[in-house]
Amino acid sequence: MDLQNILESAKEIALEAGKMVRSKLDSGHEIKSKGKFDFVTDVDKASEKLISSYVKRKFPEHLIFGEEAVSSSEEDEDSLIDRIPDDKYVWVVDPIDGTTNFIRGMHQYAISIGIVKNKQVVAGVVYDISMDELFYTMQGSPSYCNGNVIHVSENKRFEDSIAVTSFPVENLEARQILLKTLMEKGNSLLSLRIWNCAAIAAVSLACGRTDVYVEPGIHLWDFSAGKLLIENAGGKFFDFAGKDFNMHQRNVIAANPYLADEVVKIVMNAVNSSGKVC
Image (cartoon, rainbow, N blue to C red; front, side, top):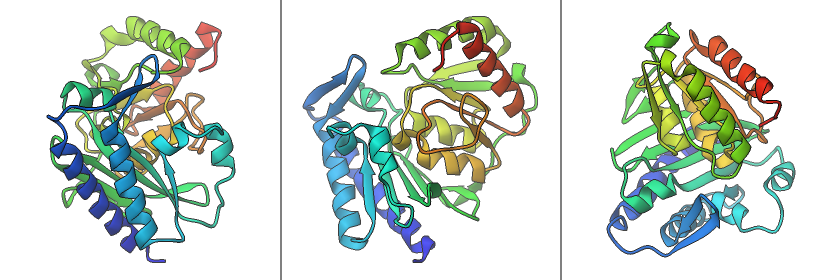
């Protein structure tokens, strides 16, 4: 199957879902708690339904791995990932990444769609709804924003870096490690952003607006699209052990190529000194 056609379809439905989400911003939302700091709204569910219906109609042989469907399943996420067949295209969908921001009317929320096959991300789309910016890429291609090629920054000094992170919503031990590291290393940074939207954090790195992205305790739907966007824009993407992508990854380090090794060392030292594994 033509991957370009799949990418164009992902862009189309991301824009359509984003338009729907934008139209609901000022209306009342039905909000349910999935955890102490994790929420879902009727708009998340409507967005996932819109995207899933589109995929089933246009690509009936493709599979869908959507946040809300997986979160409501009786089977755990890792088990569902293990059962994904290698030979199928899988649409990994976060219908609204940054739901808490959306609920509060803050700008950091997005549609994220990663296309996975053979346990590798082969295409990715992130639509920043508030900014009306569509980021997209596929294997063997540059990364783009609204039709323009993007690239990570060329900043070579950690002390000149803008870093992005988020507070984990599930792993409170990881939250403590993150806070401890910020206390120790925060003075070395030019600036820090805490956005609680993995997709926008990833694209901000991919287009050179930020230099470093570290986030513990996220999920496949949070980072699959952003992973390929970062790499195809010249960046590096690891887990907290400095290892390459895998579908069970929960803790992400990403940076431009000049800062990646230093950031991996900082994070690994923080994790090791805590005596805990994120």
